[in-house]
Image (tube, rainbow, N blue to C red):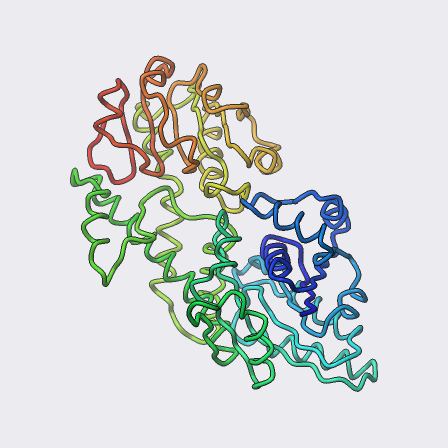
Length: 443
């Protein structure tokens, strides 16, 4: 099939590459000319395992092309995906300006019957707004064409997005007509062969499904963080609790990890947007509001543990920091818990020696006015001259460090484990004091 994807960001680029990899002819467009130039030279503007290989393979084969032209987008295909960002507005609602801008630009160029599919995360009713914008522009241009819209929200985990797209656990499609159903069913057939993962529903339900899914996962994380804070005070190890409750098939083990809170491009903004949507229809959304509050508090928990360890005064202390990205296998710093930790540490007079395998360039932009943070080329180098170590991102290379070396290197011989990666008893046996999240009185 001939497919156009608007947006060469995280979702749009993965979508374009994976559709091309199963034989489709794909054009991916973006208004950022520098990004498109990099892509046309084989450079990937984001970190996502396996994506560079797929982009290179399909670019070489001629199945994947990049452009800045809406004319190219419309001329190429009658099946067009909108995959642009929907960041938070000041009031927490989803900013739809990018999506609606795409709709207006497309409407001015469309010359044939076209199906426009919204893959961006959008509030209920956005398809209606997009369709109205398209029809308005088409009418003003005097074109005699029919345009339809559909919803196809993405469910990609950063760091595993390629695998999620190629082997999805579900494909949500919201449609208004049988023809759109047939087109999207045919498009997704290569990803849907060994069992039917395609869920066909109405458009508004599909739009809401994305928000509901992210809200549920965020609630699970917030629940475990709330339990972890209680566990700390009771001398309970939340990891043991996690095993116990996760074995219940009604609960399951996924997204029950306590830590320093969630970040990234999805959970925080989608929760805020869903609360704002609830406000607009007179619903209180108490659970969602609580989840946001728990997460905001959790981002500061490692700082509080470090401050207590130093008797309330961290002035002049040096903190080694392992991990800046909001999660492993990505360079994404959007709403990363590390931002809160660095801001608090440096505000109260500590110095930070930070290392991350992928996110340092993005971190430099975020902390460009922050005094007291330096960056190192390795995890070990970050610990040179440091008083204690804080681990914030669960990168694989942090999973099994040399604890004896850490005990000999860190001046105050203490490890603050923001992801509960380590066994407290083993860490202590190697000469370090250990502080996790909800690990009881482990020091």
